[in-house]
Length: 290
View (cartoon, rainbow, N blue to C red):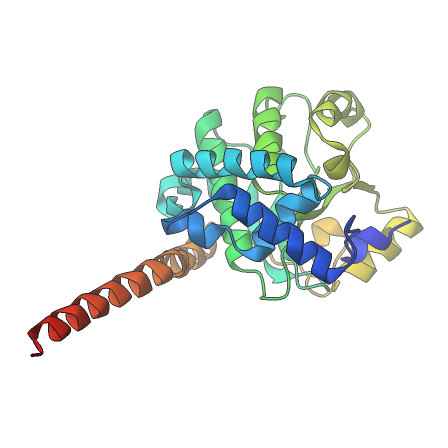
């Protein structure tokens, strides 16, 4: 029953050639793209949108076009750490300095450490970290894992339902198949009331990726050991790593990653510009020849 949690994906289209045909069909229906949209719409990206819509090209096209409009307006790839640094001061959400055993990026969430009230800024902070988790994935991996620590959580410091709903909407509709698992670690009984509301925001695919993990449950402990190296996993999640979030060090890392992000999105643009300049020079040379 835990097979899907260990990194496998259930494709509704099994044959490689059939999947590629669907990807090509989706690309053809989208039409010409340029700039960041062109770089964003890799074959792997199109495959994720098709997977999210059970390989229905028409539904995948609508979903992808909605994302392209959202990205053109929201510009998630342009967000930089210093714009959202205030949101990260308490370590309420941050990218772990380790991957799981399947080399997936790990986002650690501490909802009890909420420190601001602006929904817009909170969402931009989350989107920034989603983009950062993706940019730090190894080439063969496309997904991330969320570890949610409920230590200190109560109904007095919970994230507003409206914010949770919008965050869920962004994750499901604009980052499909990026989440491998959301592990809710030791949620208190009172969380059940909150969960009854939140679960209605989740589509079936996302809902299936949510797992409640309890430290005194042997199956849960075994599961965590199969997914994580316990020497890297923080003690808050039953691991052996006693280090705690250091905002100053994390900020340094994010500023370094900002340069990596900028280079990634600029690479194709510079290449296109260089090719265009070379073509122009070539044209001038041809015109000058007798």
